[in-house]
Length: 474
Ligand code: SF4
Ligand code: SF4
Ligand code: SF4
Image 1 (cartoon, rainbow, N blue to C red):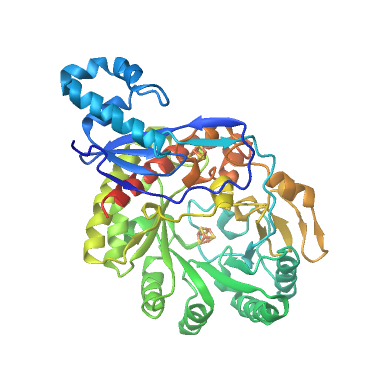
Image 2 (image 1 turned 135 degrees about the horizontal axis):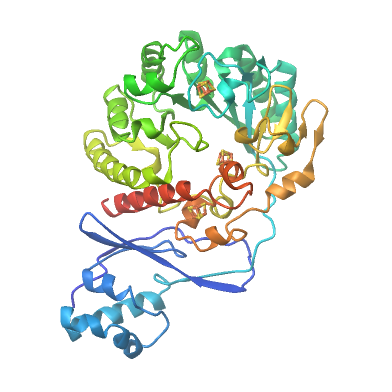
């Protein structure tokens, strides 16, 4: 008998944290791409490559029914494939169902909260920036407030707050963010030194990241960043004309020529340590695969390209009418990424590289980014917010690290949104990869933490299909 289910890629099964059995959901997602019929079993994470007859049968197949019952449902396929083929395929599908590799069950009752210690912190060390990027969500660095830098006292208090609230978590993450963090680099250095001085004392291990526009980079800062930062995020949008249309100085001058050589120098000296160049696409560069190619040609092999999620009143915002064009561009990008990985096997396009064998932990799968619960952001005044995208929204102020106030009930509120609390997410095939989307976007578009932003979901799902396809090519 021919093997119809030709290959499967196993994903680590979810360990479901003792969630009690109440509801049972069976889901598969199937799609065709570049001549392959691909079926994802959502709950087990198994990926199957199937032939046409299996693919067509799955359109009507009812799990846990007998072969005879399913054959009746497939009667219309007999003239196309022949009775023996259809019968054989139904038996093979039944075998996979019995082995919990297709239509496997996810049993849960709605989870009230997933409360965790705080393990990550975004330190907005500078609410100032040299640039005036047209899509900036941070009001060009000041988050709608006054331009200011964080003091070293506030930064140290923030580190103390993180250590105090991290319980027995050993690995703690601190992201130096802004505005532009290099505008307050002395505080970055001092904070790193201070945090390191606490590691032995409190049995902690700090991992630092910095996100920069590159304007103020020099050799001294590059050396410090490469020595101390576990990861670096370098903001540039790709081709010079694209970058310089959006990422401009106050004078209107583009930033490309100022940053490109500095980013190259940093990456060339970084060795094996992690980094990625992070571009943003808007309606102005729906052909963003060309920006990825440009960045590769400029010597970068770890790239992400994020959709700008902007209010629809903004001229360059992505709209529903752009969706099909973006989905096509993701397909073009996939072709490009696969070609680039032949030239450079270390090439990574962040959104298409999913670790299907291990993947994120169960909490991350159920809860996504963990904002406001295991992750918080600190403004230069020391105010605590659920994440960098909530900074400056007074309704979401959670306390202050200088006065040592912390609103634990708001933290609890942020422990509630999860895959099981959102009806959209609960029924979404991509849920265990997505984790429930971005609460900040949900808030800004839907004034709810767990009602997802539809266009972002559609783009996320397309990226997952591309990742799954790539996994079948290994
Ligand atoms: S570099 Fe960042 S903070 Fe500065 S204007 Fe651009 S997007 Fe905003
Ligand atoms: S893609 Fe959208 S609906 Fe699906 S899990 Fe993510 S946020 Fe929820
Ligand atoms: S809410 Fe959105 S912006 Fe904030 S940390 Fe989560 S994914 Fe990032």
